[in-house]
Figure 1 (cartoon, rainbow, N blue to C red):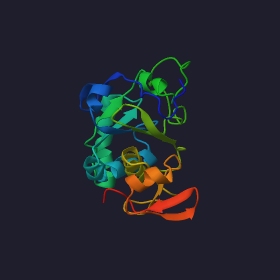
Figure 2: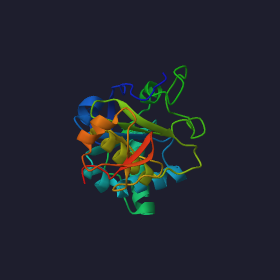
Figure 3: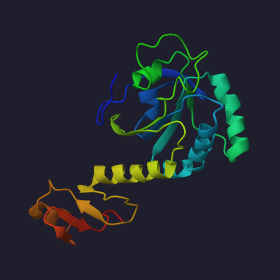
Figure 4: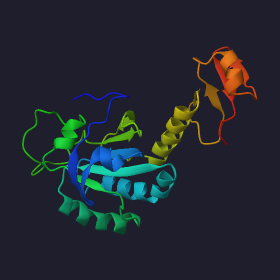
Length: 220
């Protein structure tokens, strides 16, 4: 299955470290960061799960729920969580899906649908494509996905930054420039003509080019 931006995030029922969930019901009216990793007890992912937990209060402020995905069983997730706490100082308090039958990984296009069997005997190298972060909106549509190679640890501050941008641009008719951070200037989208822009942004804007109009971040 090939997923694209704006596609409906596939729904599923699954066991997690916090009990059985229906994904869409669990998400509710929140934003969701769904992130996957290829194998429990792996070095890079150990640092990642701890890093994400350290930032959880920031995601909470933004009404973002976090959920992990691994093809390993729940019992392994729980044992691994103790290692994560020992290594990073943070024990995951967000649910982690146990996807032993590979159902969710296939549903999200992380593993080929032709693969048969379960997670038993599979290695991190076998599952190396299971390294994606999805940002999903309250409308259950995919707003962003990033896939990382196994040897490159993910930067969850960047995911937090993209959430800020996506939430802002969903509310106002603006776009964020390269490297934008919360509180910095933004761009009026080209679809908004000047007459409409005067009503939406009465404090005016700076015209850098006819197609590039810069304003202070709205809503501050």
